[in-house]
Image 1 (cartoon, one colour):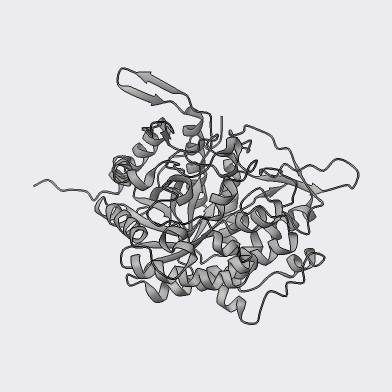
Image 2 (cartoon, rainbow, N blue to C red):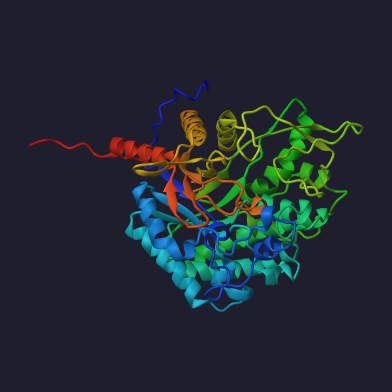
Length: 477
């Protein structure tokens, strides 16, 4: 029994209920209609990098099935859909010439959402850097930030009359530290100093991207960034401070406050002198945002390593030899109490509430949106006379308690404006391939059949109940 089980799931009028996906994870059509390779195409086809040798060539085949997928979103009552754009599909070879078929796909997608009354939230970068840019040192190279700004301007010029909200980057922590530090994500490098350079150049890309979108869009859209916040727990204040600096404040401080914190620079001085930060960069990065996207799944429990025992590396990410923690490799990540999802991540809705309250206290004028929250579980398909069903009771309970935690945060004064469930579909789960299912809609990868799980039906009913409470009263004659 959880303290969240009795919380009424009632949200303010205008609260946005939706779901989220990412281009590489669902689109497929990897080599069709002018799309060129991204770093995840290369990484996933490198032996040993992804479980079972899986790749994104087909994924959920959303590129061909987008219309029926949008129909399903409407049936579920989603008010918003957060999707990402493939840079390599829109601008092949990371060039400046728009791919007409790529542009047409995203234009039809946005129009289809609007026709169904669903708010489009477009993410420009969800980890799939064009391979050509990685060949030129990727996010370690400052030039990539400038190329991102050009890409942002192009995308906003094409879609900026219709997209309601733009997100510049999804989880730059993963792009920088897992891609260039631990090697568990594409491009698979283990270079601590370059991981920090990537942090800065992603931050710079965000700031330049916000400005580019504002200049090119014509419908006054909302601007945002999505960060995956780490919630460090434990009794060791120094360990928690270090992880908070590296995981959270390395992004929030420059983006929202216009600075890199002194303790972060001190913690990492033996790794980098941060000379890649140029005059004027922080002013470029520190751009006003309409909302801050919050991704939350689990917590970490940390302490300083004693120098003798075997290092504990339970940080929730694949251990392939490198470190996602430049300058703080001597922090232990301890095993945490269950229950756990199929990813091995602990389930802690109370920490979502605490995180939202903490962010509200740190940035009191910054509206928040939960842009990802969800859980992977090993689903079982039941065949009934009415058709297939997936009774994912664990996921339903997970969502109920996390929505309740969000409701409690609102009661504590947090300006929380929406909640995007991750993910709409089962999909390519990065280094885990197709072995982990996060979707509220099951995808049969052999037939591409979609089956809404009980969690999808639960979300549909929650949205219906919210709409009924928000509907204006009628007066009988």
